[in-house]
Image 1 (cartoon, one colour):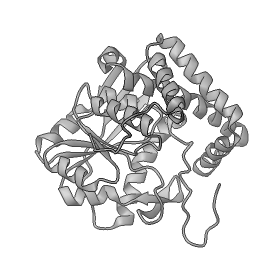
Image 2 (tube, rainbow, N blue to C red):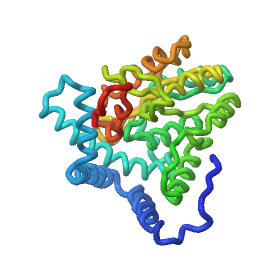
Image 3 (tube, rainbow, N blue to C red):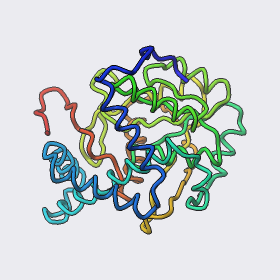
Image 4 (tube, rainbow, N blue to C red):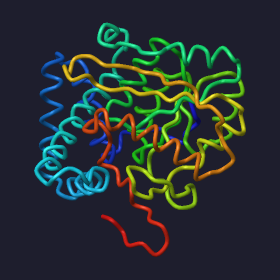
Length: 304
């Protein structure tokens, strides 16, 4: 677990809302499956109605990414996105608060040999993840088949950050702060697999501009940098909830060949294309609530 400067005590009233959220997640993790899905969907649809700012972000992302959809089709996808991400809250609670072995019967694996062969090289592996609403549950189920570390973004609330970090450290071998590049490189060079999701906008300084759904998007350079520093194979991982809403599929793709290429824009474009391919299969499950196109090339107006 990455070292964090948590307070010695969390008894202060400012932490009470976080305690309530943690208690709710612990309770939600043990609900019957159908009730869990219904509650998660309800939470998502409530947010769809009550949080217009976030609804605008999702609608803007989908309008830019799927221009072929008319307004009615896009509105339906916005609603489905909120419902899926609401379910994702309960899936995350399940991943953080319960032993993932109780869900073994709900997951099917595809092409596990790609990761096994990459690990057999002894160089460590960089697993290319994607920010689907099922992300944390995907990590928990992935751990049933292969051990891995994870790169994560610390939470702003120290109590919830401790809860989240400890939960992820139970699922993964080590939870590594996204700012700790040395830690990522060290673990990979020691032969570990590290799960890293590069599909968010972290600003101009960390990125190059590359097409994502046909739109120039700030795309993290770090994927190619880590691969170059470690010599590790990069294995894309796709994870989604199946249409029956009861089972999941974990799918590994072939390790990237000739990566990195030395061209940062070409490498980022290639990564974005892989992520886009996965999203198109289940677009409602992606984290469109994030302002993916926030950072614009110089001189372009904002999109949100």
